[in-house]
Length: 247
Image 1: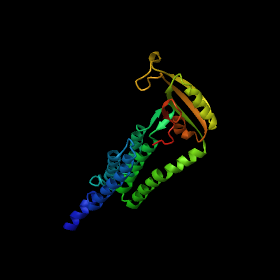
Image 2 (image 1 turned 60 degrees about the horizontal axis):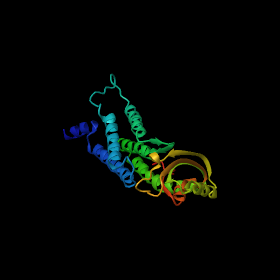
Image 3 (image 1 turned 135 degrees about the horizontal axis):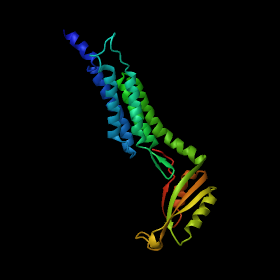
């Protein structure tokens, strides 16, 4: 009788094995979430953990949740269809994390990590712990190893970046900026004057001169380093954009 009850519980997906698969998904997705939280990304510890654990639960439901209605002659279900729906649903969640502003894309890596966490949870829920562990390890290879490698390649390669530069007007800062770009071998693809405070009045931070903001697009080798190079020019107050990461 005891053996029969244990068999029935296992068939309904509520055995210790399923508990372990859920806990594994919880632990691995938490590890990914800790990395994103530590790096200050939008989808951090709570988001990643919820996505991974929920994906595992949904997959377990698709595997075991219909055992009481299945019949070899009348009712036949395909558990893989539920897994496919998880992938589609997480895709919409990831799309909401991607931000495009002035031609710069932010959040791609974060959106991909949410999709990855869902896959880790699905693998754990499907009873494939080794695959879930492997992908979790590869996640850290990508974010910790490929980030400096990507920067190295970008610094040595030819690229194009868009920057918003705010500087003090009336001090010849724009001329110095263009000279600095020329000295570095960067090509100015476009330069647009965004504006200045109404009436040209100085702000509290810059009592000596009004502020002017320009939108400048630079192209050339090592242009991803323009933020630090142009930021060192006297009179430059702020530089936005040009990040070499899409996290």
